[in-house]
Amino acid sequence: MPVSLAGGAIAVAGVAVALRGSRRELDERTALLAGLTAAFVFGAQMLNFPVAGGTSGHLLGGALAAILVGPWTGLLCVSVVLAVQALLFADGGLSALGVNIVLMAIVTVIVGYGVFRGLLRVLPKTRPSAVAASFAGALVSVPASAATFVLLYAVGGTADVPLGTVLSAMLGVHVLIGIGEALITAVTVSSVLAVRPDLVYGARDLARPLELRTSPVETS
Amino acid sequence: MTTKRFFVAFLLVSLVLAGIVSFYASSSPDGLEKVAGDKGIAAEEKDHALGDGPLADYGVKGLDNERLSGGLSGVVGVGVTLLAGGGLFWALRRRAGAPDPS
Image (cartoon, rainbow over all chains, first blue to last red):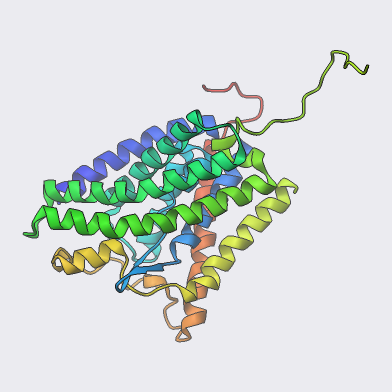
């Protein structure tokens, strides 16, 4: 219980900061896009894909949402999905909602979007770079989330289990799940970039709108 | 592609994923459930307080057809998430003409 309380406190603080930060990211168009992104993450999270030995994985969506609509709004998108799952679908305990928001919204957005932006800073500013960076960000975000779970478990777990085996088991399977996360994220980001690059928040400095030139153009 | 057309397409993709493709999803435990089960962490788990809700565990209560029940619950989930998220983001948005808060 203390861990779920601490998780709840971190989640409330994170969501509160995101509520302020997201105002900068949201206008009428992006508000609709963000609602649709949350709905997409909900749908995609239902699609468990097999990874290994009777285990499945599913999208977490933090990296994807952050890249599409901005990190603050992306954090809120995943939090809304987790709240709907807990309240309507009995998926994820109510007392665990805070911990789930920390693991699947806050950690995935910080790590996923951080890696994405970091890579775009050093890669050429092209669409293939943005897709590759989204793949890498999503890939890393899943084991980061799993490692944070083990950290919370180390602090407040009540079952008597050696931490080393929990950590290696969690990281092993979540690296595989991260590959699925990365594929779904990269395919989605590249699809949106193909039709409406201006709608991808994380790649907005790649989109080059037509310039109105007032200087004469040399013709000779 | 116009913005409106893009939004409609994005929503349709989400509805198809949640309503139809979800039927083919793996029913194996996910990574956390699996590790928690193997390592004896799940022994601490309790039943969900809302486990008797009409949409608990991604099925519509009273609908026996698995494809229909799961698909319908997915469609409802997409709709509810869109309304909840869209409503929140609409309330948070920058108003046209208002100064940029950054």
